[in-house]
Image (tube, rainbow, N blue to C red):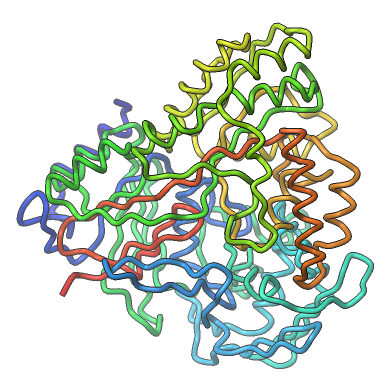
Amino acid sequence: MSVAAAAALALAGCSTSSASTTSSTTSTATGITTAWPADLTSLDPMNLSNSEDTEVANNVYEGLVAYDFKKTSDGSEVWQGSKVAPALAKSWTIDKNAITFDLDPNRKFYPSGNPVTASDVKWSLEAALHSLNAQDITTNGLQSGDDIHVVDAHTVTIDFTDTSGNPIDVGTTQLAMFVNTNERIIDSVAAKKHATASDPYASKWLRSNVVGSGPYYLSSWSKGQQVVLKANPDYPDQPAYKTVTARIVNNANVASLVKSGSINFAEFDMSETDVTNLQKAGFTVASQATPTLTYLTMAADTGAFTNEKVRQAVADAIPYKQIVSTVYSGRAERAYSIVNSSSSSYTPAWNEYSTDLTKAKQLMKQAGNPTIYVPLHYDTSDPAQENIALLIQENLKTIGITVKLTPETDDQQWDIINGRSRNPSNPGSADMVLFNWGPWTDDPKIPVGYAATKDGVNNYALWSNPTVDTLNATWQLKAPSSARDAAYKQAQKIIADAAPVIPITYADRQSVMAKGITGASFEQFASTRYYLLTPTK
C-alpha cells in the first residue's frame, strides 16, 4: 500500500466526519464520503484528464443545458441520451440555423457572487473553442467565437455553420453538445484577472481554482489526500448532502473501506466479485447499462499492425464471450460496432469477427507469420480492464503475438490515446491500448469522426481511409435521414474490415452505497452527480 493510501486510511479510521455509520451497512450520514483511486489533475473544465476531474466538473460547474435524468424504480437516476433539461438557460428557441438561449437572471457564480451573463457564456465557449477538445464543438457546427452573439445581459444567440461558413440546420445534437464538460460556463470576470498574453483564457489558474455556479463548490483540496465539496449556498435546488469528501486511496481496497464504514459511497476500482460480495453483505448496489464502450486499438501506421491481416487476426482472437461471462459475470454484452446500438445509423459491422483461433492463425500465416512483441496499455482504475488484458494476452500468444501488459492510470491512458492522434508527425511507439469511451450522443459522426478519420481527436491507430473521410465530411453536419444512415453504415463496414479499432463490450456500471442512501446517477462515463443523491424515505 502506498504512503498516500495509508494516510487516507488512517484518516478514515480516526475521522469524526459525517461518514460515521450506525452499522457497517446503514448510513445516518449528513454527508457523502467516497474513495478515489487517483487525485485530481485539473479543475479546468476545458482541460480534464481523468474521471475524478470530470466528476468534480460535473458538480461545481454548469452549462447552458444539462442531461435529463430519469428516476428508476430503485431510485437510480439515468441519463436520457440526447434529451436535455434547463440549467443556466431557463429556456431556448431553435430557429433553423441558430439557438437563442435565455439565461436565468437569478443565477450567480460562487464564491464571487457575480451574476451569470451572456458575456460569460461567450467567453467560456470561446475558451472551449481554443482548447484541445474543440472538435466536440466544431464537429457540431459552432466554428468560431464570431458565431456567438450577446443579445443582452441574459440572452445569447449561437449560429451554426459548416467549416465553409454555410448555415446548417440545428438538430438534437447541436443542442445536446452543451451538456459537455468542456462547454461549462466559467465566471469570466474572476478568470480574466488571471489571464495573460500567453494564456488568454487563464487555463493555468483554472487548473487549480473553481469559479462555477454548480450545486457544490470546492471547499478544499489536500493534494494526494482528499477533496472536499460543499453545497453552494446560492444554488436554487440545494443538494440533500451538504458535504462530499473524496479520499484519495490509490490502490487501497475500496470494498474493504465500504465494509468498514470508512466510506458510504463507492463507484471506482471495484471488481464484479467485490460488488457481489458487498450486495450479499447488505449494502445497496445500483446497476445500470450504460453506453460505455471498451475497445482495443492498435497503431496501424507503423510496425506489424500496418498489415491489415494482422489486425484482423487480433479481432478474431479476442475471447468475447469469455470476457462477458467471466470478467463481467454476465453484466455486459458484446459490442459489434463503435456506434451506439440505439442509433439509427448503427450496423453490427464487427460481427464478421468471432473467437476463431484457427482463422486467426490462418490470417497470421497470410501476413507472413511476423514476430510481434507489443505492449498492451490498460487502465488500472477499472479492474475489468486488467482481466480483459490477461485474456487477450493469453489468446494472442497462441497466434504468435507476445503481449506485455502495461498498467496506466486513467489520465495516463487518455494521454496515450491523445498523444498519437494529436501529434501524428511524432506519434511514438506502435502499441496496443484498451480504452473505455462513451459518446455523449447517438450521432455516428462522433465515434466515426473521432476514432477513424484523418485528424480524428481519438484516432490512436492513425488509420484513415479516403472513403470514410469523405463520407464523414459529407454527412456529419447534415440532418438525420435514411441516406445519412446508409453512409455511416458503409463507413462502419469499411472500418470493421480494416480493424484499426475493435469494439469488445458494453458493460453495466455499478455504484455501492450504505443503506439509507439512494439516487446513484448513470451516464456514459463514470461520474456521480452528488446533488442527485438523497436519503431514502
